[in-house]
Length: 422
Image (cartoon, rainbow, N blue to C red; front, side, top):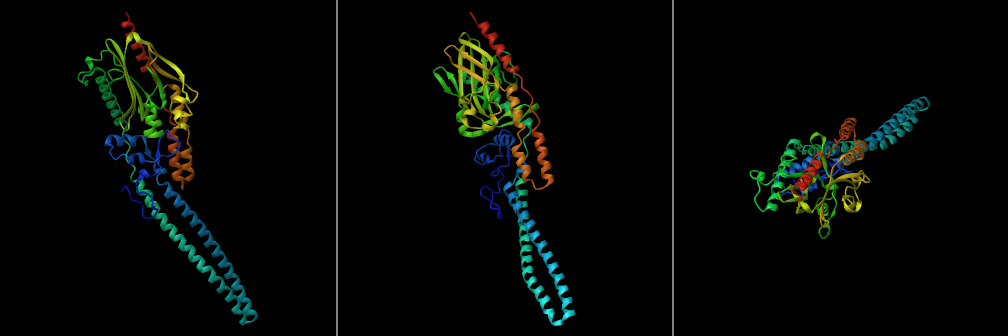
């Protein structure tokens, strides 16, 4: 079906070709060409993409619906023409009857005049009426073809993967990434069976054994201070790969936000040192970017804190010209960040999804322009009602997230640093 098009409209038969997918973070409807461009994806990657980008039936086939509307307007115009012609024929018929009556009363030879008048009028009206009827029949036939195309596209809408399945995959991947990170740190093969030998501190977020600070990749800086000065974090590379979809999010368990681009920070409190591994992770493609993994002695940790900061356009996604409309809801807000700084100036920072961020997300979800545009295009009251229901669903607020995990991590690090002090 990759290169197939509908015989009438000439448009693609693939649903993914159409801008009918709802990305909650995007002002506009998006298409599924990213999905088509990656035939190498496995089933898990495909299912996760479908979870974040969902085609809306009322938005499917908008080009065909526009053609249908044009033909409906043509039918209305031609029907008006036929009505006017019929009125003129009726009027001229009445005039002819009157003329015939007068002719009979005055002189029978005058009959040729009204009858000739009627013949001339009918010679003009009949072809015009036939042309209008033919145009209406052709338009109705084309509408039927176009409606068939829309039905064929709607039939391609896949079932949305369950949130339970998505959550299971998310934790499975987070857990496997932990094994990989720790294996690289310790230079041994860490698995589910032996990880308990290396991580002795209390787990905060099951099933992760270390301390996991997970956040939204969109919020993170594009540059941080490293041991040799400012370093790129990998955010620009992500933008190069997926563009404004770094902002994609969905509503997860308990109405908590779930992000396509995660930022994962694993903290391991080992016997003699602390290790921090951090990177961006595209949950759909399973690609990671900008991985940093460093080990510090406890007495080298100069600062470990949660503090408020203001997002700066120059150093985060807002400065990369992506998701501008959405990120505008976060500008000027003070947002909490967990920061690790060591002697020499190097630092790790994870901007957290706190109340201010969730409030900004909820403000964004109230934006309804693309739905209202769809509602204006809707042909019938039933379609408009369906769209209104979708608008109401979008108003459902995301729940606030607290900083419990980050604060617990901070407490554990402080305790370990104090225990390790000479």
